[in-house]
Each structure stands twice: as C-alpha cells, then as structure tokens.
Length: 163
Image (cartoon, rainbow, N blue to C red; front, side):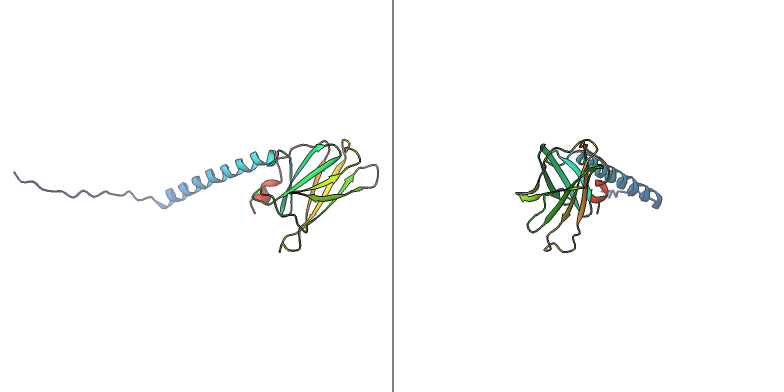
C-alpha cells in the first residue's frame, strides 16, 4: 500500500468589483447610522442633563436650576469642557415688549454664571455670544439662543459635531 500526501490548497473566491462596492457601501451606511444615532441620543441632553445648542465652533449646555442664575458650559465638538480662561461671554434677555436687558456673566469653575433679576417669561429668550480666548488660534465667536420655556432640541448639533 502506497501512502501519498496530497497537498490541499484553499481556493479563495474572488469578490467582484460590484460586490466589493456593495459591501463597502453597506458597512459605511451602518457606521454612519451608528454615529448619527449616538449624536442624536447625546443631543437630547448634555453631559450634565442641560439644554444643548450649537453655534459656530462650540456647543453650549445651559443649566437653569436656579430661577435667578444661569450656568452656561461650553463644549468642543467632542463634547468635552473647554478652557474658559481669558474668554468672554456676552448675554442679554430679549423680550418683544422692551429693549434687551444685558446680563452680567462671570467665569465660575468650568462655566459662565449669569445673574437674572427674574426668571424669563414664556416667549422671552436669552442670547449668548461666546468670545474665545485670543490664545485659541482660529476659533471664532459663537452665538446661542435659548427660548423660554426651555426645551431640548435635536437639530443643529449633528452638523457641529461632524466637523
């Protein structure tokens, strides 16, 4: 009896160009869908469960727990707090009935705290303009508008995050 060793080679099935394009497109679609879902899930509430708005280079998260004080946190497109040293924030309460009222804002820890004489009424809005530190090269000012009563929004942040 003669024993022979047969060499077995795997035959690799080649993928055609249309199949490869389809596979890449399907994978890309799944990845984009996951990213969009993550963006909109995070868009409902900020890291501190605050109200999110996007504008320019930054994302703002407003905390309004105290009726006479607003806390505004500034986030980068990766949703991380930014350094506020040497930055400025202009804020005003806008009502259709009278002139805008400027709010005094100061840096307190990782946020800007802005004092209010009274809680904004329905239909009024607070407008913020963040002016980043001159040390941050290439960064532009960003504007954020919050209308009362405050509501979470799910539009406008996705474009900012995908920069």
